[in-house]
Image (spheres, rainbow, N blue to C red):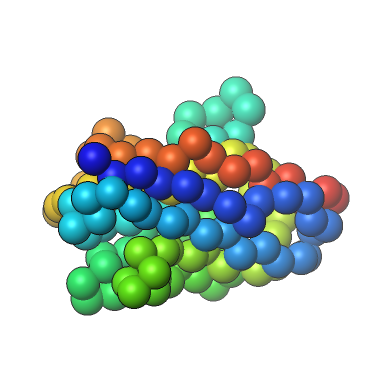
Length: 126
């Protein structure tokens, strides 16, 4: 099992920045792919970004390209999501997810990830 704990959410004004963290523990070797998803009230969970921990290859949803950056610190078993130029529509609960292996074509599919954190609320005031 892999345990994931998110932190860093909060309330920020539009145009501001936040950095989310996701710390993995347990069988961390089972978390070779880590991603961020978000879910706004009344909406489905959607892909934000993902990273392959061994090679650092990153993937982004169009909504975050140019504004969000996913990174990792393998020594700390932690993945980060730097979010800049935040918009009101970025308001959501952000979830960290992990899995041993996901093909690139499925990297944005929530069902492909076996491990999930509890989520952290991000609220962007307009």
